[in-house]
Image (cartoon, rainbow, N blue to C red; front, side):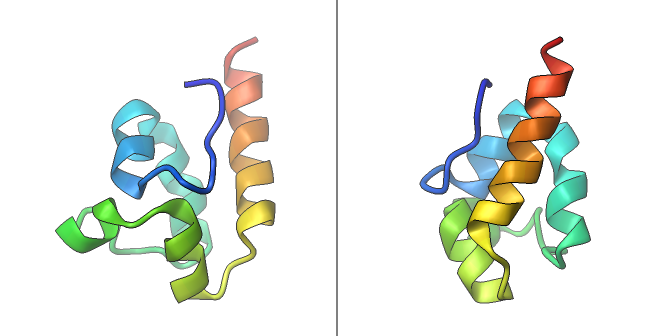
Length: 69
């Protein structure tokens, strides 16, 4: 996976890049394994948890870019 976008589901992201779970947990998204949260988009999850989606995506995508090197 090259990049995570706000319209991807949490499940899709974690299935493809399990290492990014750390970043979701760091911002308070502790229910990553529950069925409902896995169907939410990154944007929806950020909204529910009061997290700036763009900030989270920036950190996650920087991590992914560094993994590709």
